[in-house]
Image 1 (cartoon, rainbow, N blue to C red):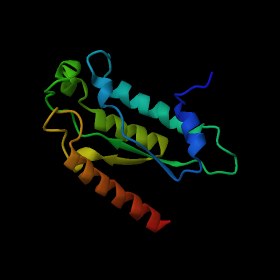
Image 2: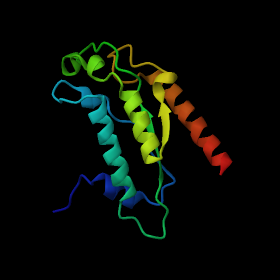
Image 3: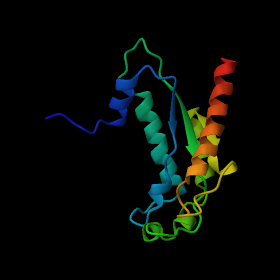
Image 4: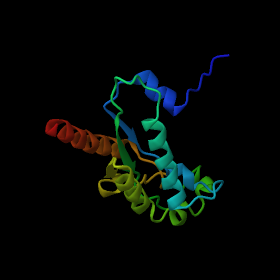
Length: 150
């Protein structure tokens, strides 16, 4: 039976060589069904960094650089999914700080999306279309500057 849902390590292997892997995760960790705080969620990102670095890529290929993006702070959840994020804005306090620590300790690039955009006005958690555009342009600029320096 073929696994239709490859693991992160398999995805990295399948698409290598990669110059950069960008991770922007964490907001869903604060759903009320999970008993997570900012530190625990950041530790999950740290584990993903390990998985990327240990992916079974060809030894002649470079291990990709990694950029961690802290999502904008969760504001008061609203709309159809608000019940899933009850008190998420409180439980996620300090997430940017914890991701900053992980990024420094793990020697990966870091970007705080909250410095250029807020969470969605629609649901208070995700990004709206315009916010995706703003964030995409900002990340493209950072990556382009990094490439120009190399």
